[in-house]
Length: 556
Image (cartoon, rainbow, N blue to C red; front, top):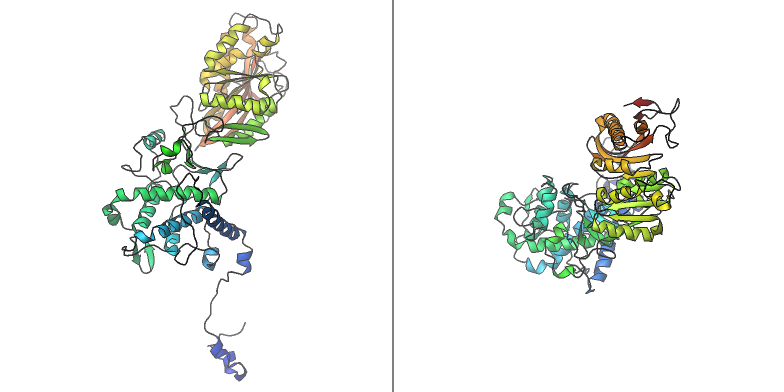
């Protein structure tokens, strides 16, 4: 509210306040590191703690000869250029993430450890320059957050984040990189394809161009003239230490790179690869570029490097994440399926995997018996393990191989036997069937209808990837197809034409792609007078059709 000291009529005109003329040195704001904005900022406190965690744990582990990756010295000395967040007010209040802090710490440590080899360099990076370069990285290259999977919080790095791409040299000679590139159809983000590599090469080379005090990346002409063959060992050394620092920062036992599922693979094997740690016997066979792509352990199965446990709604699911696919987006559908299963039902899971829907049917649905079909050998071993771990192995039968072949024997066994002859026959005719195969389970529909209980029919839960705009037409086509299959299979039998297919609900599980959803259709297939026929508004249904969200039935 007071006038400016230099303006007319200010306090300086008063002799009593003449001392202000020698006390006031300027006007502005200063960020105090001990202010409430810092002390009350939980994000800043967490980032500071994460940076300190790297230093403490890395210093402790640097003397441990059992470390799988090369360790670097993290000793504190006066020559260190490492950014100390607790001493710099501007850095404390900056929006650096834990991922950025780990990368900055890794680069600064590498510079410290290689300082003796850089005496002849015209200019090297310091801590502030490293921080500036890391800030410039796109979110795609250096994500703000990383995903966790499993009860042990395994850290998951996105497919193209912190990734080094070079068509000539960074795709390793053993073919692992080429295989992954082929599986992903060569999809590499344009900006992220070389951004991270350019950062590492510029830091390693130490060539830094200045323009008006602002540090810039090395020019393309400079990079092209650099002897890149001498840099890749350093690049991979930095990468290996980065994965270790990320694991320390996030308190994770391992770090893996997310991989794509090869659409041409019949068993839909996982594309995840381990980045850290590298354990025997793989330690002696791993190439340097595996720190970029990740590696596939030679040992698989229980307690292997890729073995992980994911607990969802009280159901324990263990598997080798480098061999078996796992989607956490299906967690709500697994719970829903378990709630749909009624006590005493016989359930068939035609594409069981590690027990995605088999286990909820037994643990939550209290099914009398579940027959689970699977042909991936790695998923089979995990399925048997999970049945025992959840103490339901006595209520399940596992069929190996193609379900269209393995189920044929069950159908033949019960084809000429009445339902109530014995318990074995009861278990071979099903009240509820899960068809959890993407992008479509159409190849198993004929077999699924054949496995339904002949006297009453049953429920099919059909998974598919469906364009959002075509969901209604797809649902009508699905019911029409299933009803046609049922009538054709029972041609000549009494009341064979009375079988209908009625869809009562379509559940959206998740978005699979832009304008394409992963959905599950709940369809009853059976005779019109079946006691299992869903009740409809206005009475029972005598024809094939779809029930909408408000209970209105529309014939197909």
